[in-house]
Length: 197
Image 1 (cartoon, one colour):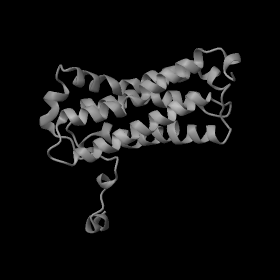
Image 2 (cartoon, rainbow, N blue to C red):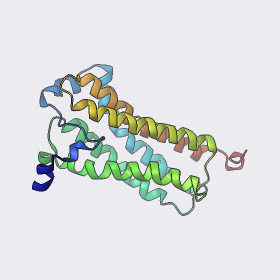
Image 3 (cartoon, helix red, strand yellow):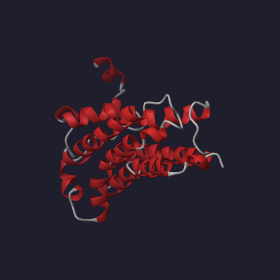
Image 4 (tube, one colour):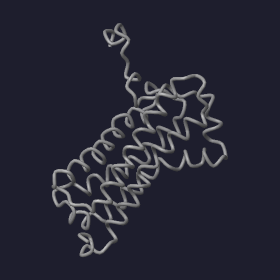
């Protein structure tokens, strides 16, 4: 770690790691504005997509019988409370003094990798069959969400960036599981015989 400090490299220098949050911003985060309410609610949408993935796992296996849909569903169910506790409950705390932030910093990138890179790659390699429109919408959603995460993280390193701007970027990032919920619901509830049309 001393070597990393000597060279100036830090984990926060990666494009998707934000600067430490300010404890003084908590009143805005816990305020009654629509932006703040959405900020507090969106982390729980990971659990929604997890429940839907678990609920529709038998139908999702028709698209890819080898993928671990139920395991991913359970992981996403857990990510909802972890994300809420890290991003809302522990807002203003550092990774050093928040167990939730330490869990989130491992679980969130892992699940993002599985639900974006792995699923899209499996489609492109022909291991998973999803309607092309679904793949394109999901790919675009992942790109927008990850770009929002990176832009918001970089903005957090500038002192002039307002908490409202940071919450807006975080909301765009946390909208990805809302899109995922709609896609899983659509795939799970549709007639399989129509999928190849």
